[in-house]
Image (cartoon, rainbow, N blue to C red; front, side, top):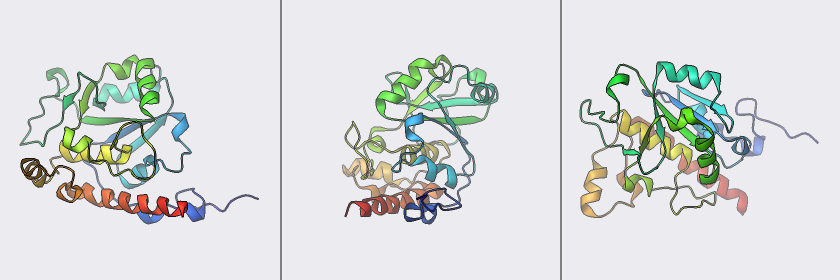
Length: 222
């Protein structure tokens, strides 16, 4: 028997995520490169992210080296790949226009935040298969943000690993100057694990909805 689907989010009605969707105008557009294994994962967060942000596209694949739409976008945008490699530049809360991770030759281009959505192993494979992605400027979150994951519903390879939604919201808040000063205050106080002291401006509502989404998913385990 076919399951009843929500007409808006296209999920089974008992797993509908519409209550967790919010409308947010993001200044920096987002592109999610999603591994095919993640597309129908019920605990994935990209569906919620894409339906909440005004400027968010999702391309599905594993090898993006010949991806026409992606390569076209990269001619018009300065692509910033959120990936914690050794050469990644740490994002900091912006003061004015201190975007020192943007090269001089691309300073005139608008920023495009690019996310790899998959397990650590799958994301690494996507990167290795795609020279055009490898060539992007790589950025990462400050340690106190990267270790502040609240992803309770899915087993991850790293302790406190962030969901794609959390990582995107934190990065957007940093890029758009939306991050609240209390983060730096909490670092001085040694209280960097308290999510209540991290506020991401108008992206915070999506993080709050994500917390509700976590509890909703956990209710299915009872």
